[in-house]
Image 1 (cartoon, helix red, strand yellow):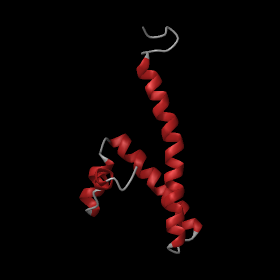
Image 2 (cartoon, rainbow, N blue to C red):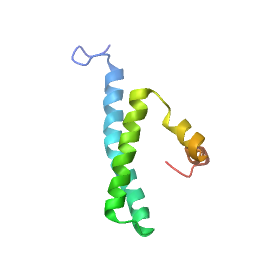
Image 3 (cartoon, rainbow, N blue to C red):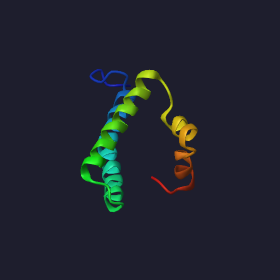
Image 4 (cartoon, one colour):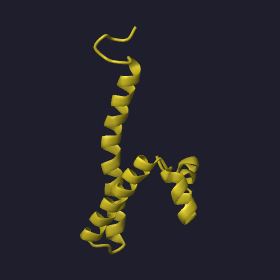
Length: 90
């Protein structure tokens, strides 16, 4: 029986866990990408600008309901899901 103190029982707990994992993972992913871009010769200002623009794009996709993964595949030909399927990303 769900706790009377937690709305929707396990759904809320699962959402809270997911949010904590996201808050941990996203900055670490950005850090890994930043390191690679730095090694490729990008300046810190360029990297920060890229991350700011990527956040804007993410918010646009959420506001307007388009799929980020499908968009990148359509625009660039890069199948981000491919890396997950092959085990090359976590």
